[in-house]
Image (cartoon, rainbow, N blue to C red; front, side, top):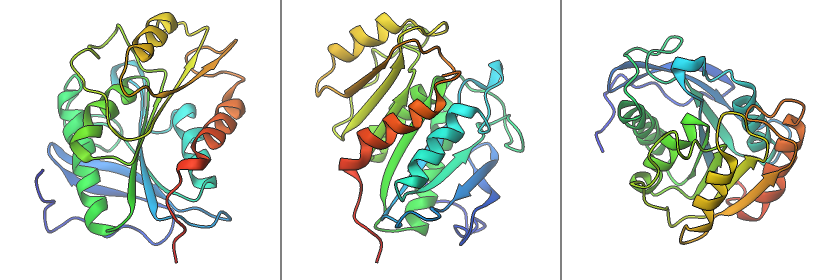
Length: 226
C-alpha cells in the first residue's frame, strides 16, 4: 500500500467536496459528517455503479446508502471512479478502480487514525469493494446488488469481517438467483437481505433500503466518538 503524496488534503471538518491525489490523477470525493446522530469512531467509503453505464457517486442508491450510514453516526466518503466527473484517468475494468479505493482508504487512515473502516458498494462498486476488503482489513463490508455472473467473483476471497449483501428479487440487471447461490456457498456466510418486488435500482424501494441497512448494521457499529 503506497503512502499518499504530501499534497494530500486534510479530511474536512464539515461536509464538502475535494480532490485527492490518486494513482491515475485526481480523485473526486464527497465527504460528509453525521448531523444529528451521535458520531462514531468509524468512516465508510461508498463505491458507485459501472462508469460506462452512467454510474457516478450521485447515483440514488449510493446517496441513500450514505444517508443511512450518516444516520448511524459514521462519517462517509463517496467518490467518482477514474474518468468520471472530476476524477482523472480512464476506466480500468476494476483493477485501477480498486487501486483508487485503496488510495482513499490509505488517506483516511492517515487522517482519522483509530477509525473503523467500512466499505460499501453498489453493483460494479460492490465488485470493486469486495476486491479491496481483505487488502484493507475492513471492519464491515456492504454489497448492494453485487453483479455475480457479470464479473468474476470466483477469484475474490471472502472477507473475515462482518458483511452484508442486499439483493432485490426482481433485479433486471443482475441475476438474483446467481447472487443467492453464490452467497449460500460462501464461508464465512454473509448476512443476506432479500428484498421482494425490488429491481436493480431500488425504484420506489429506496426508503426500504435505507431502513434495511440501518437495522442490519446497528449491532456492528463502532464505539461513540468522545
